[in-house]
Length: 207
Ligand SMILES: Cc1cc2nc3c(=O)[nH]c(=O)nc-3n(C[C@H](O)[C@H](O)[C@H](O)COP(=O)(O)O)c2cc1C
View 1 (cartoon, protein in one colour):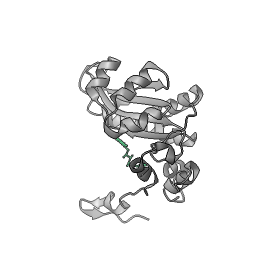
View 2 (cartoon, protein in one colour):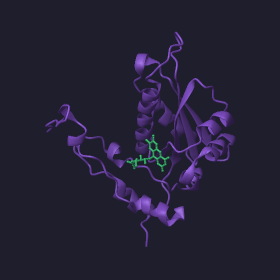
View 3 (cartoon, protein in one colour):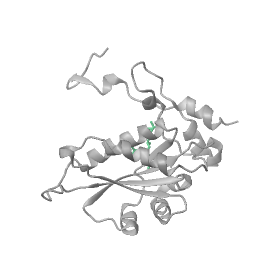
View 4 (spheres, helix red, strand yellow):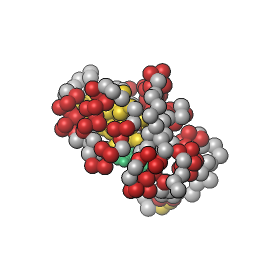
């Protein structure tokens, strides 16, 4: 027998560490989304969090195209999904495309930090969503040419990720053994010693 949505949610939380914001450890990327809609007020809150991200020159190059279930935009984003993303992500009540203006508005020069800044904004967005009890799953697996054409996005806007957003659903509702196994699989991370260095090749001594 599989686990319920609330059981799997607890299983997927990273171990709490005193002093780290609990929402950071509670965020994870599910593939099963419940039928429940997200309110416009909650959607506004997740974008409000993204809005206050830092960016190079305070350019704020990020844009988000939001499709709620039943809309033409949701259908277009869903149609662009690639591979196995097609099998689960269209069930999310909200699909969001993140994009970044790749030129500085003031002089037209390339902004090489545009996607970096979009990533920072999206990190705040997903943490805020977690704080509201929402689940998010970012995807790089979508057809970029198809979505650019169907949504009419100009070339100077770089495409980031598609974000599925909604409430966590029951794992069994995925209806596919491989997807259910992934939903229940433990989450892993490299240790701090592999990512923080006191000099190149030397792990920093922390704590
Ligand atoms: C830029 C980006 C692209 C991703 N692309 C996909 C994708 O196409 N399909 C998918 O199922 N998950 C995708 N993911 C989700 C990652 O696999 C997931 O974040 C990672 O395994 C860590 O799991 P966690 O988010 O639950 O901590 C993507 C995540 C990011 C940030």
